[in-house]
Image 1 (cartoon, helix red, strand yellow):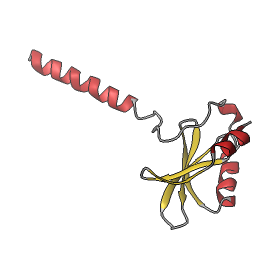
Image 2: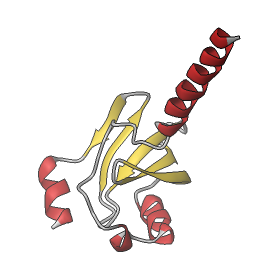
Image 3: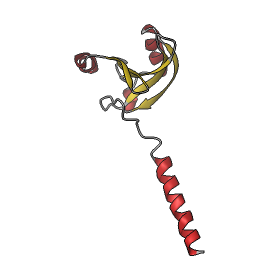
Image 4: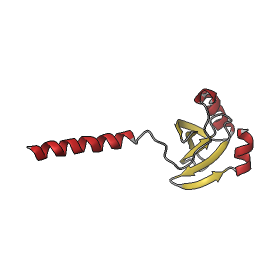
Length: 112
């Protein structure tokens, strides 16, 4: 009986640890730290995605960036990382393969 109680407690702890890490960033790309109150609106983000020639699918905050799921030029889904304040396109990747990366000076100049 005591072993069964310990096993259930261990499972509960493991489940709590698993679910608590789900909200963390993926770590693939990160943007500079900014105040969330300064972030561009979702409507502005959607407009920028369209201006860049992509079809917006959905988005989420990730690593201090807007991570946007887009339909890429080959009509397959990719992840685009936009700076949340300037809406500069910093990176596009699919399954760990970088399809586009803005030059470092573009990322830093636009953020200033």
